[in-house]
Image (cartoon, rainbow, N blue to C red; front, side):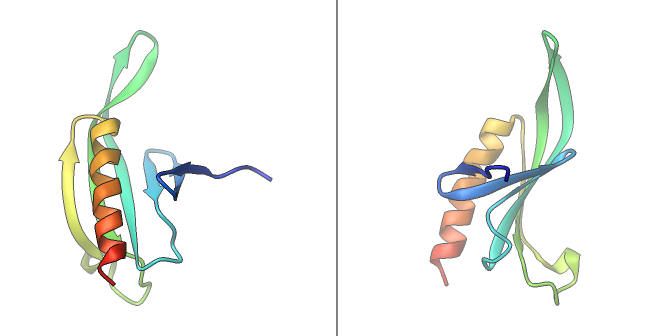
Amino acid sequence: MAKTLMYKGHPLQRKDSIIYYGSFADKYIIMLQILETKKVKDLDVASKVSVQLQLTDPDIKSRDRIVKKSEKDSLYAAIDVAAVWLERALASR
């Protein structure tokens, strides 16, 4: 079985240009979407990343699930914000 990648105690799952941070079993999850990349040597590096704190409730319309959103110019900056948002959201239950 594949080991799940974890960051600060929460799972990270990638599908194409979208990375989900957190667990769908929790009330909130973060969706990171890589909008633009640039070449650094021979690697594609994220240069524009959308960060969205979302409710996981399937009964809510997808556009109404978004609690907070932002754009960052690197995956590092995006995951940094994501970790803070997720911690605060999950702590405020």
